[in-house]
Length: 435
Ligand code: GDD
Ligand code: MN
Image (cartoon, rainbow, N blue to C red):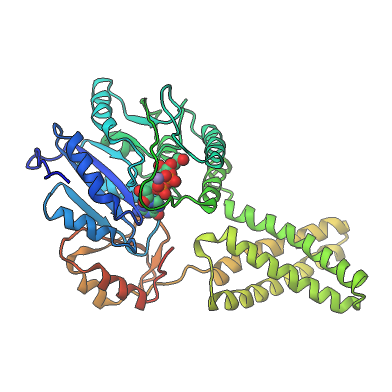
C-alpha cells in the first residue's frame, strides 16, 4: 500500500464520501488507498458508516484513521439498514457535496473527480453512476441477479417520475442543499436510498448520469438477499398505497385470507381422508391455520421484528390468544348484525373485518411488540460523550427504560473507545444483536 497522500485535510473538505459497511474489513485499506490516488487534487474525507460488523470493520477504519485524519468512522449499535446508514453519514458531514459509494470496490472510484466536476459545471443537484447508461455495464452479474435487478428497476421507475436509467444505483453524488431539502421526508427504510431521494425531494431534482461498469466483488459477500428484495417491494407498495394504508396491514390481511384456505383444506383432509370426527377436525384445522398464519406473518409481515428460539413459542401462544379473542369478537359482531335483519353475508363480512383489524392491532402490540431495550445508565456513562441518543434516527426504534420514549442509538466515532465493551453492555441489556 502506498503512503497516504494527505492533501488539503487542513481545509474543510469539499467532498465527503459516505461508505456504508457491513463486514467489509478486508476492503477498507484497499478503498482508502484508491481514494488517496484518485482524489489527490480534491479536499475530501471519507466516512465509513458501519453497523457494528462482527469482522471488526470499524476497528480497521479506526486503525487507518490514526494515520489519516480525513478517514472517519461512524459506528452504529443495534441498528441495520443501508439507507439509514447513508443518510446518517451525510448528516455527519458538512461538505457541500456528498457521494455515496459501496464499500466493496464494485463501484469505480475513478469516476468521483469526474462526477464532482460535472455537478459543479452543470449545476446539478445530483449525479448518478448508472450501469444502464450508454457505455455502462452490469459487469459479470449473475443472470438471476440481472433479472431481479431489471425487474426492480422497472418497478422503481413507476415510483420516481424522473427518467433515470438506473434508479437502483448505490453510487451517486448529491449537492448538500438538495439533500437537506429532502432529508426530512426520506423513509430511510431498506436499501433504496437513491429512489427514496428522488421520491421525497420537494421539487424535481436536476440530475445527470455517468456510465458505470460494475466491478466484481473481491472480498466478502453481498448482503442483498431475497428478503432485501421483499423489503424493497414493501417500500414501493407503501409509496404507491400512500401513508393512509399500512402495507403491513395489507400483508396481514392477505395472509389471513390464505388462512381460510388452509383451514378448509385441513378440515377436508381430516374429515374425508382421515375420517376424524367433525368437532375434532375443526379444532385441528383452526390450530393449523393459526399456526401457519403465525409463521407466515413472522417471516413476511414482521420480518423486521422476527421472533426466534424461545420467543417463537411464546409468540405463538400469544397469537393463539389474540386470534381466539378475535374469533369471539367476530362471532359477536356477526350475530348481532344478523339478528338486526342485515343480510347474512354482510353480517359475516363485518364480523371477519372486525376480527382481522383486532388480530392485526393486538398481535402487533403483543405478539410482535417492539421490545424495549433497557439502556443501563452505566453503559451511557461508559461511552462517555460518544454514545449519542438520537430520536430521529431511522432503523428499528428502541425504547429506553422508564422514559417510554422511542429512540435510536448512534455510536459516534471516537478513536480509542471500546466498541466491544459497549456491545457486550447492549447484549447484556437484551438488545437485539442483529435487527
Ligand atoms: N451500514 C450498513 N448497513 N451497510 C450495509 C448494510 C447495512 O445494513 N447492508 C449492506 N451494506 C453495505 C455493504 O457492506 C456494501 O458496502 C454496500 O452496503 C452494498 O452492499 P452489497 O451487499 O455489496 O450490495 P450489492 O453489491 O449486492 O448491491 C449493489 O448493487 C445494487 C444494485 O443492484 C448496491 O450498490 C446496491 O445499493 C445497489 O442497489
Ligand atoms: Mn456489492
